[in-house]
Image (cartoon, rainbow, N blue to C red):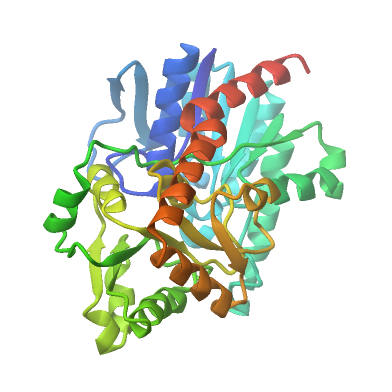
Length: 390
């Protein structure tokens, strides 16, 4: 197959979407021996009309200056030039337009559908959640809903990264007016484990042998309970357990600034780090923390990174938690509104090295069996083959 991926972010740009798209392209090329072309954003400093490169058989064209109305002609021209069997569109509404508003792109996708193109929508986010965002985002939230349903109309198939969304979409009335089929595919880890001497890595990060290292990786989105991270350090310290909190991500300094002085001296804030450094930091840690107001789910690539590295996970269960993930026994979950239960899980693992090891091994096995890139991309290719018969 000749596969075209439309995505505004691609390395060397730094974002989870950029890293995800690169892994997706590489595995589509490697596993399916497909011709893969990525159409992405042109660097603002790029003077030429088009910038094209090829790496490991993947062609990357950095030709889209804007993904809004002004870029529609370029987008149409490049799609026609590529003449793909399938268009894959990773869907994250805020990535394609300022303020998360861009009606031009989904309308352009509808136009391509009318021209006979086959498109698969890869949904990482639906639209702004009004339960998490203040009312001043009401207009953006409403426009994003219109954007999403227009994109659905354009798609032959819709892949969503968590099961609750898949179940909801299958029952949503607008789906009845389309021919789109709904599938669930998790978002694998963007961080590949690198060979690491754990004790040496801990020394390099300034971690003492006796310290229990709690680690958080990712952005500090409004859905993440940042105060619970600080309370976890305090809870272990209150029990006389030497603990450190390792923060990995571009907003690490923001959480550090919020911490009380006593907790702040126990925090190691790495900030943004390359994939190899993140892998080494995860392997130097003891417990992965992921307290979320909507619950852990298979769209959280940070969770997948922890599982793939064999780290025991303490998280929360909420309305977006995938039921098979909750039943797996591969992580410890507390209700999203129960801080005490969350802290008890942290304390339990901090005091029991054997249980940490067992839980970590179970998580790694779960990742390899159900959530790894080869498994997910093989399922994606099967979906494309299945849809071709429709």
